[in-house]
Amino acid sequence: MFHEGMQSGMFGDNEDGYVSKTIALVNCCPPFRGFVQRCAQCDPSVSEDSLRRANKALDHIVQLGVRVLSERLYLHIRPFFERLVKRKWLSNTEPYEQIEALIKEHFKKYHRMDSPPYQLLVAEVHRRVVMEYLRSVMRGRIICTSMKMRKRMAGRLRDEGKQIKVLFKDL
Image 1 (spheres, rainbow, N blue to C red):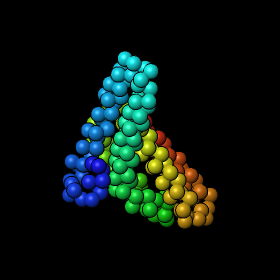
Image 2: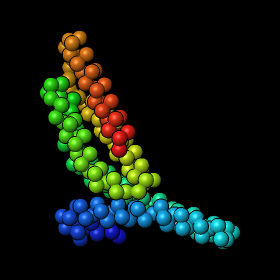
Image 3: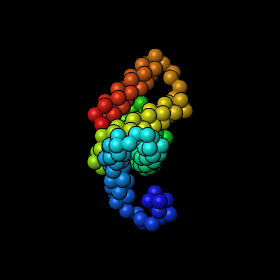
Image 4: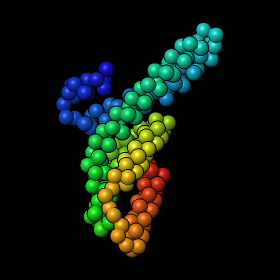
């Protein structure tokens, strides 16, 4: 209901408040999961189905929070992926630098998320960034006319690949 309210404009333009509340909701899941596990130990025969349903509901909350936060980040970085692997890309690192800067900026807020859900968020954003980067490379319209240009392009792809790997390892 919280996320549906955001979609309908119930929270206005207060994106930081929405992000904070989403993180707070997701952070409630690990303690609730521990509580459910302890309750299930009291009477395993009665609580098997309850345990399964509770874990499914908690997983759904975490997945929804991760999806919402990663999608909000992606909306900010998508325009820069469209500028990758164009003619000017070989001489201008700005699009990739903007993508990295926006990811770091968003993760300053996201870092308040507790560890298991936070790792899911990092993995999801990493997957999405690699997928969009590869999509940009595949759609790229650079025709290498010389060996020097091919080497520059390969070096650039290698460097940005390493930077992506380091960025998400740090997160």
